[in-house]
Image: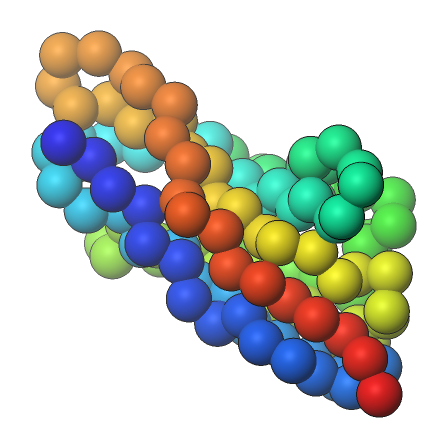
Length: 119
């Protein structure tokens, strides 16, 4: 069984920063891409950032230059450093990963962590 556990959400003022973490545990043999998605009330879930096993990454246009995705392969953990936060960044942020457990590659989601940007 594989689990993704997120942490780091909370309430922050506009212009502030937060760092999200997501750790994979359980039957993890290797991890391909790791992503952060977000879903605001009344909106569809959208891809915020993706980092591949080799380290290459891509971002949604709305967060380029403000957010940075990184990963620690030894800890099976992905991070999202969020700077210059705006009220429109308010959403539930979900971690997603493609994980190979030595038999098959599955798609896994975290439980979500709330990020609220408000004064």
